[in-house]
Image (cartoon, rainbow, N blue to C red; front, top):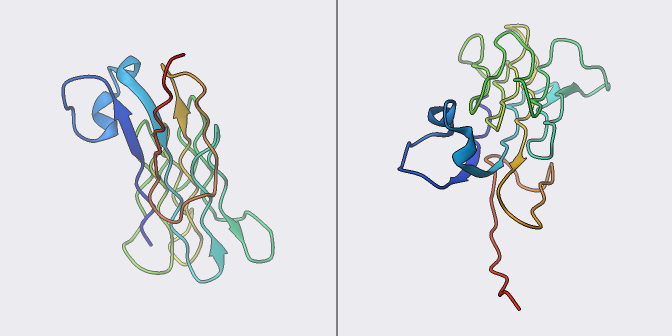
Length: 151
């Protein structure tokens, strides 16, 4: 299954998807990481937080599952995540998971028969009192901005 996409907010010309900011990271204000795609025998890793969650099997092991993205690197997997993008699934089927998008995306499942993708990391930069929390939203990342008047 496909991983969830990241949601981002940036100050710049519209560069489109987050991966297009790879050479302009200073323009990104926040990123809500997406969760990793899951299969029938494992859970995709939650996205968001400073580090995306590793995917895990129902028995608790992490064998063959993608790793979560961090603040500095994509999660490991058959295809590693990268800045703004989760790792692609090995084959497009319901038997393996792709990594979730994020500041750095999660890695995809290591096998073509089962396994899930890791979650993408969140990011906070250039805003006051920001926070990022993993596992709050199902699927794609969600960004919430609350206006606080200056006193």
